Image 1 (cartoon, one colour):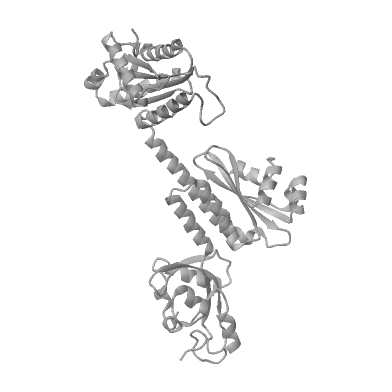
Image 2 (tube, rainbow, N blue to C red):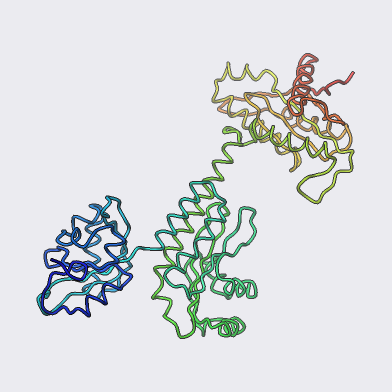
Length: 467
């Protein structure tokens, strides 16, 4: 026979005590000196999927995940001893066999009566853990990074809903972005000086805490008028941008000190660091998918994507995604570059030497092109250049001359050897109106012109269709 959700009848525990425990939202479990469950409240039954009788008499060590048990008992001992510890999260096996994270939030020991020596353990489902899981899900599903960062202030607000949390970071385009408390964001926008906590954290790449007397006068007045007192700013390195993101927490006037809530800020910092590192990882994967592994230039797929986009803009007579308009006379051209007698270098000196030559060729050609020109390695010793924004054929052929000069102006020293290098270049212009075949047709024209240049003696350029 059980009462009050599993408490065996015993002196020293009143019906009033049982009623109070039964209406708590936190999970409350009573353990005897051997770690056996002697009582569990309704919240524990509901969240852990055990009935009162199923829970009663269980050994707590059998419920905790083997990897977490040492830390769980250490946390219980620390809390019982009065130590201020970081909230401990460990996994407990539910009645349905699933593992559920539980945050140990308090313990106490009963000193008198029949339950003397027993321990009361209070736990709760960690809502911030749920936010972490939602962030991880967004990242693995390929959602925009900004959507994941939007969740980070919720980690702090779940524990302290009255706190003003803000995340400052640079978006993928390098623009400053703020996520979180609009009040905190307004203070950042209106006080951009280097004497602010957020600026100091970004500059020092460390945590910075300001008490009211340490603020500049204008910021102190503005914060005070908003009911805010001290401020903690925590720096989080951004590996993609090479800058520093900052998490800001404000303490309310008359409210708990910042030190009481450092755990929430640490969790936010870890989550933001995870998201920013994930963003760099994705950027590196995307860059690798669109780059040539040897030279770092655009690869064939990337070149065709950019060519298709430029041909589409050319066909419409204007740029689709910016404010610069085409005057209708812009030339879109492809220069197909094939190195002369490169196979001899590979056969005579080996592929290692050939790779060094290709890398040097890429560097030399890059130096003589405009920033807007697209240089790609299509494969082997074949390169291509996409030129746009020029208006005369002579301007395009001047590009071809610069490429030839860059390659044969001096010998290439690599792997202990020295070789001379030249190239044959075929030039093709996108027709107006557009012809069938699009980018494939244009590349094919440039390729055939390149072979004409080789037939004519190499180290020269030929325009497709020229007499």
